[in-house]
Image (cartoon, rainbow, N blue to C red; front, side, top):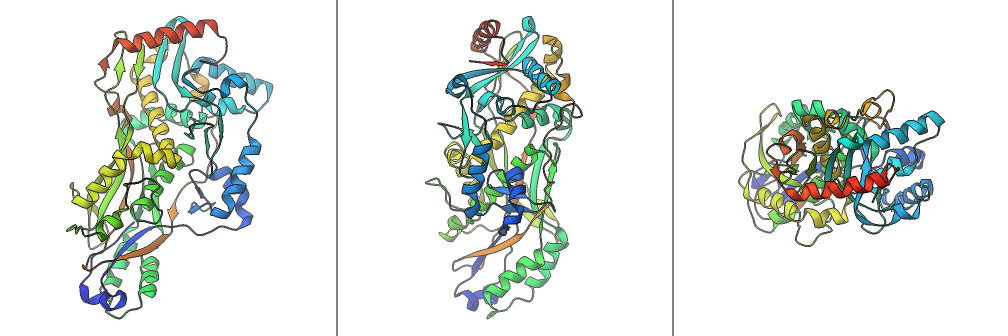
Length: 458
């Protein structure tokens, strides 16, 4: 997403006061012929077509999407439907359950695909006496929300998904080397073309025509994903969350949370940043992990996600360069989103989906760094093998159309936004703190595990 600064004389007559332009990704409606793709591809209210173009699921189709996905859900046993503060999932037994399905030639049931309804990983337990690694956290039965995502029946919070766990486990080493990220940014050649066009804008130019030409000059914005397979659901969650953040910041979507105004509204209200090229991105926001003395029990703590801000400087060739600092208004918007994150993600599940993916990446990094498979004598061979246990393949995200909008104000400033999602799970697992409560939690989990033969239990 991109914007620029221009003089008072160029657009003053056109809009009776200088307009602020934000360029953001906005997707066109799709025809009924692509509904089958949407059912398979949609996450967080968006989907990728076969050309890798990010598009909104049009509002008129969302009820049908929800209905189709609801029909595809199998009925759950009553004990799995019940909400619980702590449900355990055994990775070794989960692997055995998957292998049994493969041997029988049957598809994986929903309870496996949705990891028994886990909604967040709170604990990771190493259980050498059972040759196991156990994930534990709040859980309940699930349904489909209004944008077609799988969420808890009572809480509305998204459930963890097997595909995302597999990606996290298989990408742990790549994440160690370079982290995990996604971004949606204009191409340098588009920015250069726009800058050339900007020089010719004059007072009296037709505003609508000018906006359309800005969109045309900038062209499609490029989507990039690193650290995880681009064709994975995990990657689509990153992109969808980034896209939703930008739409909120640039006022394309109204905030569902009181007190979280858009960046456009903050600026229009009178604040005047010197540089109107902010960059926002979502990063990890964890407290130090807690552990027991033996390193067999670990607890993830903290909100999980925060919003960061920085200014971009655009060179004459259209390249964006970070300045290492943020203007006060952009920083205020980022801080407000961070403070409102839990409330916001209650309304927009895609942000909790993002946190779920971050949690799973932290867990996968922890399993590898602490050699948990060796400690437990638990070989996750099937879970780690993409050939034996492939994930669902999504269309690779490549680009999204540019869309311009404006807000009137009296100063000659135009605004922009870029950024994405960027985090390094290995940095989160450094410097844990010992806490005896984690050992007690593990003890209860082991007692329950010895009483059960299932791959999950409460």
